[in-house]
Image (tube, rainbow, N blue to C red; front, side, top):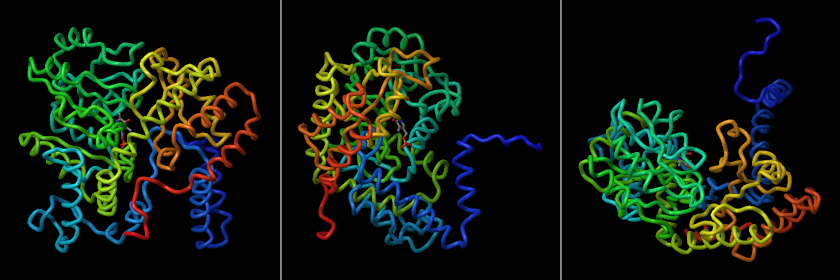
Amino acid sequence: MEGQEPFEVHDPSILAWARSVIERSPSCQELQREVVRAVRRNERWRGRECLNLLAPEAPTSPLVRSLLASEVGIRAAEGHIGPRQRWFAGTRYIDEIEALCVELLKKVFQSNYADHRLVASMIGNMTVYAALTEPGDAIMTIAQPFGGHSSNRMDGPAGVRGLRIFDVPMDPEELAVDLDQFAHVARRVRPKLVALGASMTLFPFPLREMASLVSEWGGKIFFDGAHQLGLIAGGQFQDPLREGACVMTGSAGKTFSGPQSGIIVWNDAELTEPITHAIFPTLAATHQVNRVAALAAAAVEFLAFGREYMGQIVANAKALGQALHERGIRVLGAHKGFTTTHQVILDVRSFGGGFAVANKLAEANIITNKNLIPSDRPEDWDFPSGLRLGTTEVTRLGMKEAEMEQIADFIADVLFDRVGVDRVQQRVVEMRSAYQELQYCFPMESI
Ligand SMILES: *Cc1c(COP(=O)(O)O)cnc(C)c1O
């Protein structure tokens, strides 16, 4: 319609900027340079000058990164591993890469089965719902203010599958499952699956107790370990497959520090047919073999460095929680030692809420995200009270407990307006300049 902007979900001013770049570019080659320049701007700022405390991020090793650009990334390889199970011929070496990846994942997670074809952990969760539930089934999952993720809720794969979703009762003080309430609700609802997936995750789950309870009616526990996957692989968090979960999914690019994508592992041979059928041919076709190669290399890094790397991540998170608490900032879970994961959660309502604080910190080159916390009501969802921090990237850059004190000083300076944001930004760039080399991986020239 004349004079009316078409409906758009993206920020119209940024799309307009892109159109103007495209229109004023004198040549196609120059246009490609514009793309590359945008990538380099991010690489310089986020890659070299920022303290990235985003909990879902992790820096991949130089080898993992280089494999993502490898030749095999242009090859098509649908189907299962082995010449008889593929649609395409010529997959001899691709089979080797994929078999290495599967066997390495099985070794890292000590599982009988693993699949390498999930281009995202969201798709892993869809796989579980497609394989283990029917439309109309009841499931129990964690609500968003307690850390639950959309993939297990109405507006994600669980909702798309047509499941009836009930909340896992959580204790807002303990930030853990309220077992008595859970027993009460679960016995009434009799969920086929209980999905324990949390993007805000500080403390372990009472998995054994929950698994034993739902077994009364043949219910199962599905652990969505998107965030904790690396910690689990590094032996720094509870081990869901050994504590009663029948299947675990997770993000390869969060604490696991591999290429952004998904992982799924399970032990029971009876689940193999439904799970792998849901993956292929249902949810994956070409599945990015370059990514599979990178995932295999990341899994090797876990065998070599996982325990030390993940142990330091948790030690750093505890130190950061303590340091922020000492500087007068409200840290969730203070009475329980702040955290047992890579995350620290702040209540920043008195500083203007998570949205304002995250944006102000970003001006000082400290990258975080706004987060729902248990006290937030549905009307607070766009402007929640919490702020989520994660220590994966700063740890892989070689920072230890002492540096967490320094980071806490930067954050406190911004929150209490003690120092101008520009001044803090300068200090962050200065501090960060000393931490540019990734740790917990083999030197590139040795490979
Ligand atoms: C991040 C996350 C996902 C989705 O993972 P992707 O790898 O981004 O697809 C699923 N569940 C939980 C709990 C998450 O935090």
